[in-house]
Image (tube, rainbow, N blue to C red; front, side, top):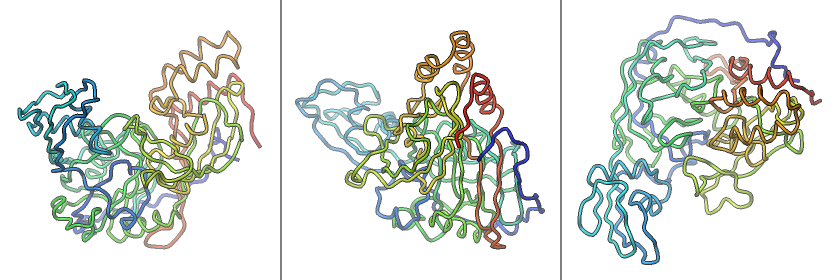
Length: 431
């Protein structure tokens, strides 16, 4: 039984060793691209080969359907190119790459109507740069091969449009005395358009995610091996490879789903069954491109991908208006826990994107609690600034020694405070 109020959880002794720059100076990657909707993925490059590219240079020449009413130009173009972000379309419009009835317009809110002829070319992605920054890092373990870090909530793992500084990668570059690096801009999916993701796939020097010469994608750069990723709002444990050998080894472990990952969350409500396995494919929500959705049944023409999660209720909180839930991932998909939690009807507390809104939380908590606690509950819920999700445990086979190692870090203060306040109302341990 997992007890988050314990201070005696075993963590293997740390054995930090001096970092050797020479060991990573040749750690060079041409391709460092992620895919629309694949940030939470553990998939291998082979599973992704053949997917659509990053949309650069894609052309659209189309007449607006006469049955279509008046629409914003950016909205209409986004609807005609499957999977592209509106932010990317807006950038193309502002760059003068879109014309309506033969006239170039740089106004994203330009209105189009039935019969209008639209010509659009999608702009190239702008390169992103990661600058070394002296950012405090909670390093749980480090040797010459790997580094395990406890990421705080609100920190983006690596630079993305709108999050150029203050990233985990920038902190690691400084910690490891590595230079500034550049890599392509990216299509992304997260809590806000063009933000960060959950997990990442890396490719070796001779591989490209699209089956083409990776030199077309970007120039060589030196960078730490971010093998997986956590959402900006998610706190917890993350492993970083410090050598190419370690990167390849860890990537293979992720591919085979042998990495042990345990998450804990605080949910809105309690699931009907206190434990279970969810085996429901996940794909992009066609009604909201910053969100994924669990799609029962078929893989919907390939747009949904298999996803499996195991969950267990640890405690029922506040009269059953909330719960502390443990999650173990069998696969890694974009926002997998968040999408599966929503599918179960228990969105994560604080997860506005997936239904865990303040109103939703209070509508479940208030009927199950005494009126005298409602004021305090409202204050507590209004202060939650991120999804209550924490990567509690991380275990893997050391890429050099072959030893199985695991690490555990309790949730940070904001998570612990919410849990403590809900426990104070009432708690029921689930056996």
